[in-house]
Structure formats: C-alpha cells, structure tokens
Length: 337
Image 1 (cartoon, rainbow, N blue to C red):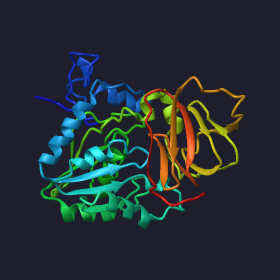
Image 2 (image 1 turned 180 degrees about the vertical axis):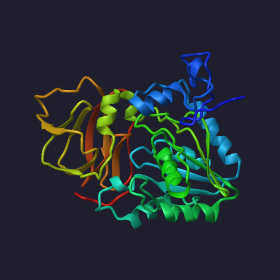
Image 3 (image 1 turned 60 degrees about the horizontal axis):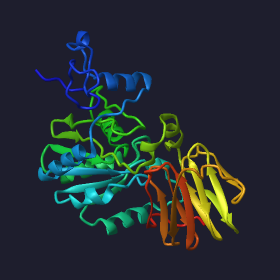
Image 4 (image 1 turned 90 degrees about the vertical axis):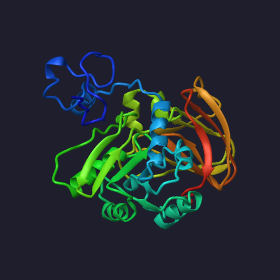
C-alpha cells in the first residue's frame, strides 16, 4: 500500500536515501512524514528538491482541466509567474492576495483590489487575507462555498506565496483536526498535491508552488533568506536623492540611483541599508549589474526582495547575484514620495 508524506505530499519510500520521500526502513510502518519534512519541521533544516519547474507547470495545466474552483494565492513581492498562471484561468478562480498584515497601513485596500480586478478580469473575486492575523478568512470561506463546483477546491500559486499557511489556518478555523502542512521560507516545500478534508462539503487540494528561477531566494544562502523574509508590517525606507547615490543592502547587493529623485523602498525591516559614496565605494560591484529605468507610474521590482517607487523617471544600476530578476511593472499601490 502506498503512503504519502503528510507534510509535502510526496510518495514515501525507503530505498533511495537521496531521492524525495525517503524514510528510514525501520520507521516506515509508523511514520507519516518523509525525512526531509521531519528535519524541516523539527530542526529547520532545508533540503533542495530534485523537481523541475516543468514538473510543477504540468500540475498547473492539469488543475485547470478539472473545471473545479481554483484559489490563486499571490504575494505581491513574488509575482514572477502571475501572468503564466492567469493564462491558464478558464475555470472558476478566486485571486487571493496573501500576507496583507505586512502591507503598510497607508495602502488603500480598495485601490489595491481594483488594480488586480482591472488587470486580471477573469477572476470571479479578488480578496486580501492574512493567515497570520485571521483577516478576511471567514469572508473567503463564504466565497469558496459560493463558487465551488464540487467538494474539491484547488489551492495554487508561486512557492512561498502563503498557500500552506492559508490551509493551516483553514484547518484550525473550520475543523477539529490536528493536521498541518509543513511551511518554510525556502522554496518548494510542497512536492505533490495534498488533499485536506475541511468538512463533508469541502476538500482543499494544496499544490506544489511554481519555483520562480528569477526569485532572489534561489540565489542566496539560507541565513540571508531568513533575513529578507518579511514577517511584520513594512515600514518603507524613503530617500531624497539630489545626486547619484549608492545604497548598500547588507549581505545582498547594491542599488545605484543615477539621477535626482525621491524613492521609497518596500523591503523587510530586517535588511540594513546604508548610503555609500557613489564613486569611492565599490562594494558589491563585482555582482551582476542590471541597468534599468523606472517611470513615476511604475514600480521597480527585485523579485522576492523588494519593490521601489520613484517620484519621477529614474535610472538605476542594480548589483545582485546573477539570475535575479529585476523589472518594472505598473504601480500597484499609491505614492509615499
């Protein structure tokens, strides 16, 4: 009889120690969790999975063929696969903007929701939630019951978008069970589809998150990933720039602002940012450089790390580990500068 890990959903096995799903042969009968999830849950140790993005995208395609309700969980700091997932939305779907507790209180929630409704009109609803603070969980529960096509509802999104945290809160709020899903700040915690029965009328299907190769967390050491993970309400860093200026992000990289501008940086409060001499300080200039312009109607995004708003057309030079995506997008939230 096949057994599956209750933490990540992968098939348990005791033959290949370096493959996903391994458990010690002597523990196989009584265990409910693979070695990888056990060590992640109890010791915080993370092991890279051998699954590729093609594997995860195949699951996404299969989900939308089912014609069941889909909850698309989105973290605005990690939207690299947003358009790809939306391109597959032809069954009922709700867009869930997660981690609302980390957003600055200055953000207008109605305008935020309106932005996503206008840009992605095929979603049945757009809602903000915080699994940590239990914000809008009851409202989302009602929407799920309103739009579901059967007892099964899929939950998908980028890795670390907040899917497993959302499901754990659903389990806590609406069941008497002690089940859980393993959560982590590192990518690809969930490896296969996991079925979680909430009640007789609702089963949530947690899916593996798509690992965005351009996300900075795939290019940093685990300790730095802990540092940049946003856990509390962001306090934007505001800089009035009169001449070319360098900002040093400790242990991460460098941002050069090339012309006069006022900028706001939305980033983890734990990241130290220091102004440095533009011409005399060469720290991090050995990293990969991206030169990019950002309009005042746009936001500059460093995928998985931060986004930056500017008061006028601004030229940037961004120094980071090679492979990190840096790009502009339409401005999602209002201005602080």
